[in-house]
Length: 138
Picture: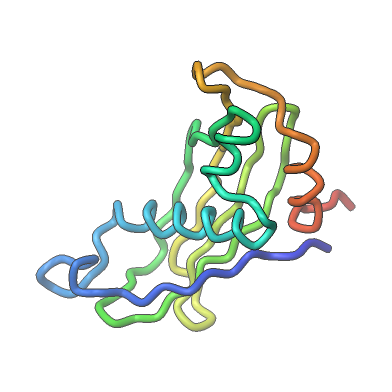
């Protein structure tokens, strides 16, 4: 079993169209915020990774499935865990729920790159910190 990062977001007027429905691109912002908060819970941050390891975490690709909409003043929860990793990258599975209803599901492929944009090995301390959140094979 693995742990899951959870991050709560309230939907504001600025997040929606004139009908009160969340604009589809905003879900990417919610996923990014959840990943940033996940880093903070393990004692890291994007700035710390840049300063201490001369690295950045960038999105290589994402696959998103929109199942239902979120609406103005909804409270949503973004749940995240790592489903796979290699020496330089990992895939984070992220899902958005309204109450217990899954509304958006995504697989985000993230890569560690150096400050020149070249893939670089994920620092051991980062892997060790993420370890409880990595999906274990059965």
